[in-house]
Image 1 (cartoon, rainbow, N blue to C red):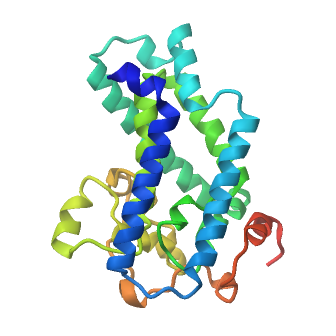
Image 2: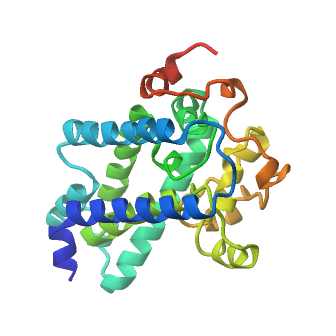
Length: 267
């Protein structure tokens, strides 16, 4: 089974991406949490246009991506998990958790360092919040994130399957928790003990700085609880809160070219 997953990684990841997108898209259509302020077709074309552009760039710029790096580390015996012997299921679980913690801290750093915030604010400038927002990142941020992933993979030496599982979780849960939908409150309270929910992460997209500087987790919520970056609810409620950044509230028709140029624009 593990060999099959490793051999068919591109197909499996694409299938999860499309399947999750369809399911979340249907959920948003049936039970939207908020009324959109901008044209959804326009946003989807441009937000996912950035995603496909980023995917193309990664394939061009990196001869080895995270999965390939894990295979290289295993072949060379590099990294923590290639030095210490643990049962494979334990290694996979630990590798996924540690990779997720790194992504949490990477996210924090992109908020705290002004130069990196200039890149990351493209994600936050979206005036609406839906599944397409979860795939909207500047290519330079994606490039830097891949460098971080490669360093982590070579340092940890996780099994190839652990990297594949993590990449699928990162993509799928990011789309889930950016959904313009919500779980019933009683269910949400339980789910957010183990997974970042849409209502939990939506707080992070508030125009209020104290709120968008909290709830950094994408997959696991534990890091926000542990490092005291957790806010349970937006101060103005999910229906009343304003999504995005103050300075871009009037820019509702954000094209792919507008987004790519955003970090380099003067306010």
